[in-house]
Length: 241
Length: 176
Image (cartoon, rainbow over all chains, first blue to last red; front, side, top):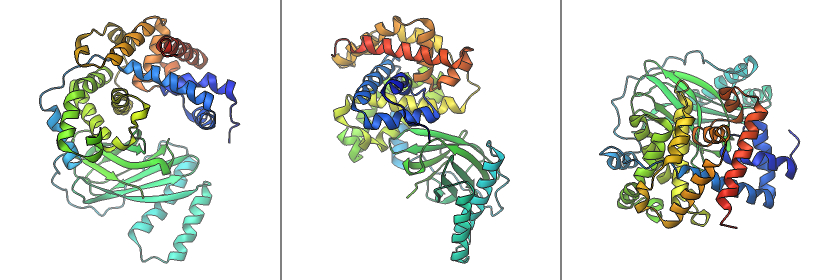
């Protein structure tokens, strides 16, 4: 835990916090201070108003015809018309390509295996599973592991997202029945509606796996989305409960 | 907004029509590609719809709230396409030159806010304006700004801090 900043230290950081340029420990520590300090909160609000006002300067441009209909279609069906589904694959996910330290990658693999078992082999001995789960969390001082089913726009199961709350927190997605191949951008939408990019998942023959560090608390994630870069309607979503 | 929260399609259509030029214009300013901007702007409206409950009328006007959502959606795209070159200098010029073209439909306080912030932006040094725009419009962290501009991290942080202090000072001057 980093030492919390006092008012003078945090005042220095508030302009960056208001623009969104503050990251990591400094951001967490500044937010923690602002939470309990009315004076810094007022200062941050004033800076944020100025930052938001800058957005007013972007020149308005009328979008192409059909824009409004496009929005309504996305609202009506959640993500446009459903695509034809590919054949279901039962192959194990390919080796995850993790962009993180080896120790972390090991923790991911151990936890993902435990999580996959929890989903796929529900008849497995519960006590053994619980033991594995505890051990998994102990490996990296984790708080909890959560599995969320991902579905296509027409509600078909398409994969699983594993959330791990720890230090660092991470997300691992395994897709086994995606409606289209290619790159999918993963987004963790928080409860304020802000989307946090959570990496890219390459899908081949409907299957793919990707693991990434999460820069948002698992409890704050309202929805996880995987969006195809090439096929607009190929969107997989999962809602943590 | 009540319509957005309750999910009424007609209210949604009216809402989209009313704000689409603002949202699309902002998205286009950030992502630069019309097809991508259209996707971003549509995503922004979908998010606004889904999270209409997160809008608190006491916190201010709808437009800044909606534009902040659009900015976030655009940043998501920009972050994923790292190959896309940032052009903050072009954007700064664009923001400074914004005409009163769309203002006929704007609320009076919006026009006043826009005018004040434009004057404030013009008062920043080129380096400060670039740092602030890279942070606010492109979602870059101070470290990323330092790398892009080829300056030490401390310098990037100072540019953001002084730039924002100045913007705030000019912007709030008539409010307090």
